[in-house]
Image 1: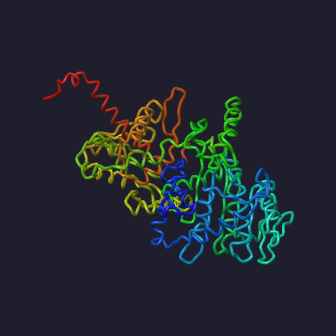
Image 2: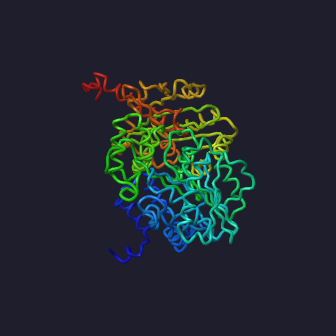
Image 3: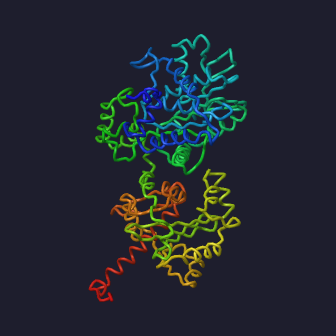
Length: 557
């Protein structure tokens, strides 16, 4: 090992090994590591710095604590590399004024990977060693019993270590008299939440929360603190309509660079697909503590039991492999999509034949028009988007979507008012297609409008395109195949990337597939328009192939 590598902290070594592929990791862990390295590169430009001493201090504090149950009872904590990486990021990143950068942390991981012990360690550090005046730390949950799990672990740790000389545990609190600090369990059935001034809130098993009420209460009480910390740690759940899944969706968008939130650190340990659950070689993706706090034999027993008892499958997938079973898996992985960034100069597409897909929105939402080219043995996608200004501002406020940046960079065009200006869109489309040899454009027959009639009157060929399995399955499958084989280019459009990440694909009993707008988390109009454009091209090719004169070469001069 080189001297340079010897200097790396264990957390840094973990990041290096994930990036190099030495450690098998899922997409979201690789994205979290990639974000860490990007942040190091641009720290000065963003007004950040990494405080190695503070990161090491936090890790050292937690490793001075002791286990209180199981085979390690009485022995010191030993943070595994992935745990060190989490603590390293939370406490190492600082603003120029010395305050912590990350105020919100989301950790999602399968059970028996030491998550509650880590949460208790973080809580005690924030109570005793963070330096906050009169710290208030809360272990929060929807019900009292759940809130007390992390709190009870913290009490047991205090009693087993020298912390008992400084901290006094009571039934419902741990008191730090010297600093006037407290740690308490907090739940919806604990009574009033008036007067909270939290410096740290631990939310364990966020998936069990029916709504964001507890999170919102704690977040709203953060205002008086200089550098508060919300520490969310959870396994996957069953309710994709709940608060946890929505927060998870935002974490994924931040990791992918779709949303921007410099105050949020997130990392998700899960399987990349449901199909990996019975492959022991893949289990470490969702279980980074494999071989430490849980064994392969234990997981193998869980898998065997689930295969013998179908009613147990959902629980095993969720708890042991951190898969949201009610959530449809990602259709096309982001890394595969990003491998398709185009190399064909866009200028070379001028005058080339193309086919269009038009997904007209309702009056107050986003409209998408996508052109599909077939040049240089590859397909190229050129997407265009429009949104009413007031709708855009609403989405920015409610969903933290980067519309303003997309508009500034030319990826989205804003129309004035609170409804889409179809005349504006029509004029833009006519201007766009004037540069190309447009063959025909497909549109949703159930959303035809005067705009279609107007475009036809201007000479555009517009064909209705059904949204059922019969029309959508073949081009959807072909679209997927093209992405996975690198036969399609998209030029890195961030809006189209965001829409693909949100696309849910449904399957009928015959194996036909299609995008499902109703079940997708966000807007997917650009992907639907892309598939319709591909379907229009496929229809055109089929028509040529079916012409017997074309096949016989009688049309050739």
